[in-house]
Length: 387
View 1: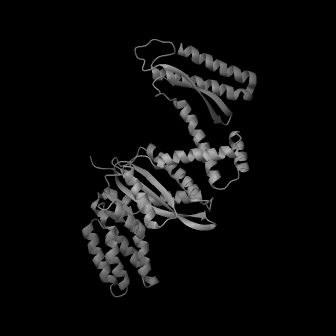
View 2: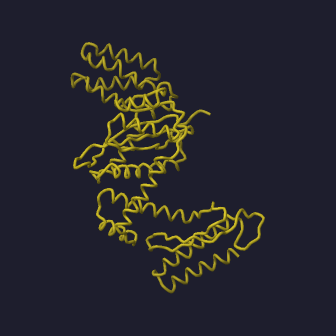
């Protein structure tokens, strides 16, 4: 019976194309989509329509009308329902991904200040759909809800987290100000990486960082064994307040950059940089501390300020030596977040200036959620933990 129904559906779609040519494409696709969803429901129920079966898990419960926007226009679909309410057709889900991608595109154009007229023209050229100003606003609102749910989702056990910030130009009260964009990445107990959250604010650094870290904790972040970041004062104060007992690894790349401020002669810079690299590349902490002592003796006379700084700062980059050797390369710097910041800057470069913090947060969240979803589908682990 099911095969006969599928054959009739295909025949009907072919007939629409024969009679109407390309003008019948939308009707043909609608017919095929409705048939595919109906077949999915039968597979889910374990029984065809009107069939008695001991394998049945639920019962059909009519249809729900839905318009799916496509390149062919809006398709009037009938989505099959079940009594238990647990069924949702995957064929429709794939179509909705395209619709969400369209929403993202509209919202990103909206964020970047593209006029409604241009949005309408671009979407019409790409998809054959007309978009009104109210639809642009509605798309942005729907996107905000989706992104807000992603930013507030429950977390759980993450063994390592990496924190970093960058700045974007935001207009406020007639002024152009720098807004801090905070990003947190984590590595969970299975060794997979994830983007835990992001935040945008013009507030004081420590207040902003403390609110951001407190939100991660309130969302269930636990099991931390290491926090990796630079030595920004506001971040450090917030870290100590929210996660006081978690070991901290200072980013070795930032440390090498900071060292340059204490080198008195240009001719010394290359040698100092090479010596610091050799300290961080040591096989274990004992050797690193031995090389640091040698470093201090070497520059005691020629660069006393450098030696004083190194004595206090460089050991803050040694925490990573307590981790398995295979984890150190990934966690000795904030590169995990730095690469995300590069992608954010690539996408925000076109905007240059955001009309407000909310617009900035919308675009940053959209970029990061997209990357996070890609990470979730990756089979390869970022780090491997011993069984």
